[in-house]
Length: 145
Image 1 (cartoon, rainbow, N blue to C red):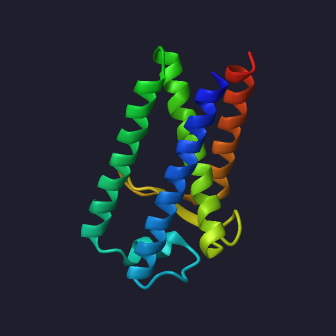
Image 2: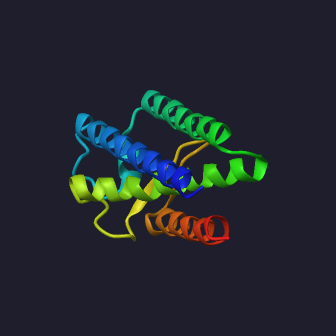
Image 3: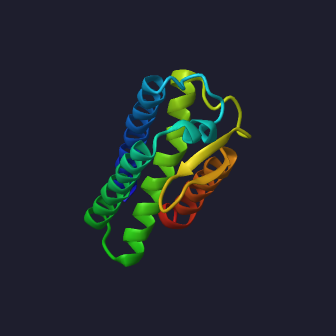
């Protein structure tokens, strides 16, 4: 059980890094690499690219769901696996961005968290906090029972 969750966490971290690199390239290509707020970036994004980004986000959720269905042994396990991978992906997305481009400058920085069905905008501490808490709760109740 522990090895499975370790490998799922590694997958989430690798996926987070990949997404971070994609975001860096997008921001660079759009000339927005030095922007402090991703909500500012969203305002300058052409509608066509927002739709493309929504498809990328949908693909990400499909990937997480597919892996959860493959790795889980029952509905509760599938949900826990999904939340586990999602939490590592979300947390390490910010870790990756910070290591690569020193963004976000702090946890109060406003970010566009998700674009489906419309933009979710909040300070970075919100997803970092929720993801960290999710990892701790699952580790405590699920892995150490």
